[in-house]
Image 1 (cartoon, rainbow, N blue to C red):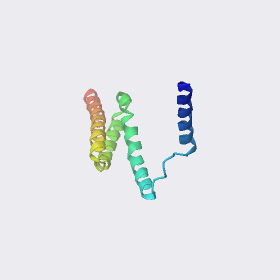
Image 2: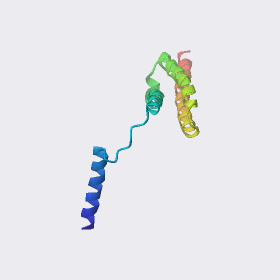
Image 3: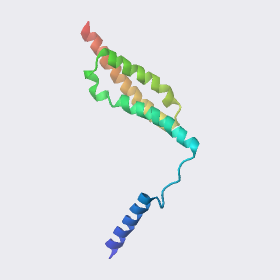
Image 4: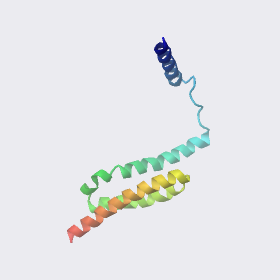
Length: 111
């Protein structure tokens, strides 16, 4: 009997979230604008850092472009709250460092 009650409760909670009975309110318009601005840098960050796995396959020009994109994204991340800024800046700098390392390695190989 206890399991049935637990399952019924979980089903109810799942349905209330699904149908919006207990869904959170929509954020105010100013928050939506901030969310879209945040979404822009987040997409760029995800796109750049997702390319680290393939860094060795890129040309020198592509790597240079990725380093420049990292440099352009850094000021946007600097504007975040302290915790997120610390986390995202560290990861961005690691991605940039990898791209730069591979770029320098490719330049040495071409000499």
